[in-house]
Amino acid sequence: MKEVVRVPEASAKLTFPISLKQPGPKDGTLKCFIRRNRTTQTYYLYIGLTEALADDGKFLLAARKCRKPTYTDYLIYLDMGDMSKGSSTYIGKLRSNFLGTKFTVYDAHPPYDGAVVSKSRSARVIGLNQVSPRVPAGNYPVSHISYELNVLGSRGPRRMNCVMSSIPASAVEEGGKAPTQTEFPLGNLDSFPSIPFFRSKSARIDSAPAQAQDKEKLVLKNKSPRWHEQLQCWCLNFRGRVTVASVKNFQLVASDENGAAGQEHDKVILQFGKIGKDLFTMDYRYPISAFQSFAICLSSFDTKIACE
Image 1: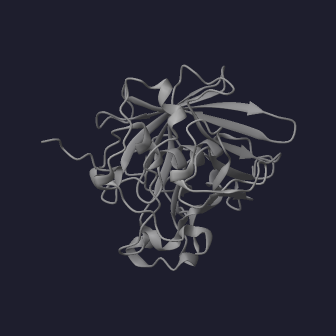
Image 2: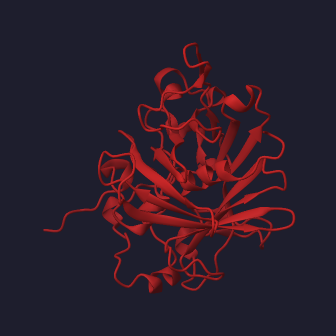
């Protein structure tokens, strides 16, 4: 009898490539880390295999920075060995404005039934079961990130606001649901002949009805730090997962404008922090995915002309 493979939300494991597009665990977090290569302007996401802050890890995603005259793209791939233009392993991107204060995360595949391609391509509605085997990668906006002027100065974290376009605010409430992608378009399979892609209908979670198109969207904001008298600096409790003070460090929680209250409002959904010169931890949980988390963290690396 075959064991039914469960999604990360229930198993707290990243079993197949599509798991990277599915919400993290409801109980606990998935502990990951990011390695930065300044020379090649590339970033690599791994999941930790031990309790150490960073070990050899298991590779998950890679990103390549592409600077343009008026914006910067961070292109995200499933394969660190093929980050070329037009690669079939491309799954999405992060795009910044010129100042590095506003970002949009684009998914190359529809995040839920009825998703609309951004106006950079034809704005057509596409359902998950309507994607043709050879459909080119699209631009489906799944998150909008903004940074504001750092009122605490260089010693405090930046002020962040993330609107999760594809996740309803109700996802963080008791019994709430977040959309769950169940498969990649078939064109992506050719690059991974030895990797089984998750297609088990028995383990599917229904995407939240109507999604965030017609409902209030989930908003994440950075958790406010507290002033530490002895250290004379603004501090956040990373529970030992961050060891180097940096303006890039942050923790995101559900905004109180979503109506999240009490324990749910204080629960850290994504945290990112420095542990070495080019090494950072990234811990995330439900209702966001590894792909969304990685993209949000990449925004912290970008130069903030108007926020520093």
